[in-house]
Length: 111
Image 1 (cartoon, rainbow, N blue to C red):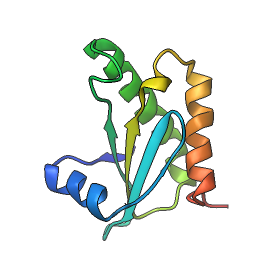
Image 2 (tube, one colour):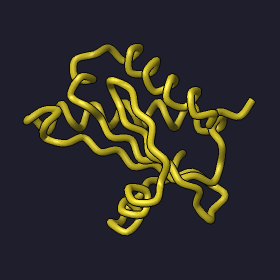
Image 3 (cartoon, rainbow, N blue to C red):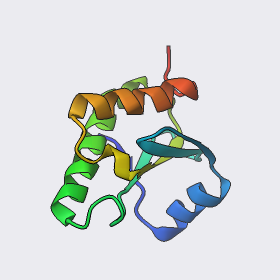
Image 4 (cartoon, helix red, strand yellow):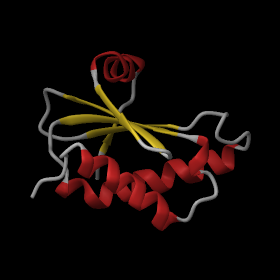
């Protein structure tokens, strides 16, 4: 199970001080934290979809995928994933490929 970013200070810290990388579906921001575990925040704005059901489905899919690969990720980071409108309507496999691309490109997977 992966922890979540809960308060505004944590989100703002990742936004202001974290490193950023993106592709057409997501933007990944990450920063080293003082803990031995990873924490995750997912942002899906109303620009992606006006319907909360669709936004929450995307959020759940992303959290599910990251909880399954958490053991392969570099530990001790806060990750913030911002969903772009292009990701709406894509299959789960396409979302997984896009997220894998982000983490592999930045070298955040443990070999």
